[in-house]
Image 1 (spheres, helix red, strand yellow):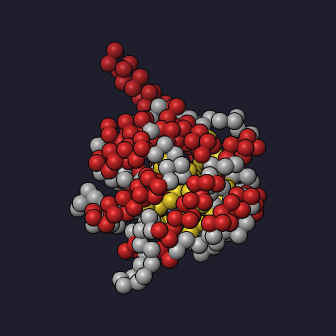
Image 2 (cartoon, rainbow, N blue to C red; image 1 turned 90 degrees about the horizontal axis):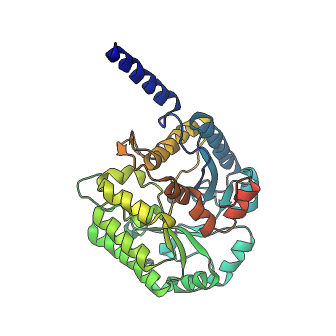
Length: 347
Ligand SMILES: [Zn+2]
């Protein structure tokens, strides 16, 4: 009798878990989430797709994807951040972007201050490994600490312009694993060191490093990232495209890093542009996987990208709030006022 009662109880608990549990719905429906690393560009139809994705995510999993930072890119250069803001119903803020830093930075340092007045909230620079941008023998500016870039960093530091999701390096190691974009560790550290040189010269730069500076695929890289964040208090990192690699590092190291530096880590995905509602629904599921990795202790069938099983970090609520929106509201211009306009309580 006692045994059958406990079996019934177990079945009921299981059913409640499936219906109300975290696998189907977030435990934090009241926490807004801001994706600081997206590439909608200036295509207003693409921007509208983000709203459909948002609705689907809320309806299926209860998660409130409140805002996006648009880093441009793709075939559609940003034309007007005001249009993008309007098309997104107040949910998407845009950055000026420069994906060819190896050919020289595109925006005149003397004019950097004007972009903020036009509605842009940051300056995105792609400064990844020169091997991906420069052909052998081609001249250019291989590393981000090239003296040619100095006037830009001088101006950005003086004016307090946010370097939004600046891309440094590419995933490197553990060797033989999936992180094969940049297999050469020497080249990897040249990129990282070049960026450190910039921060040494300009410690007051407001920065969010994309993809956690790509220093999150090995335990020793995470330790180095700790060192960078401790040394440069105005440097922050986003999590875009990193979830898929969380199984490459020690669970406790990654989790303690997230908690220790919760004030400096921002949610991001690297989502791009797409056509049609079906792709939007699939993207909503990718967001949901990323949220589950941060919020639950479940084994999640993939990160935002990729299908590798990742064990959830079960981060505390206050850490999640910082990563999801409080840090973005503090670091990016206009985010706090936009959240309030949208009806959220001021962070
Ligand atoms: Zn990106």
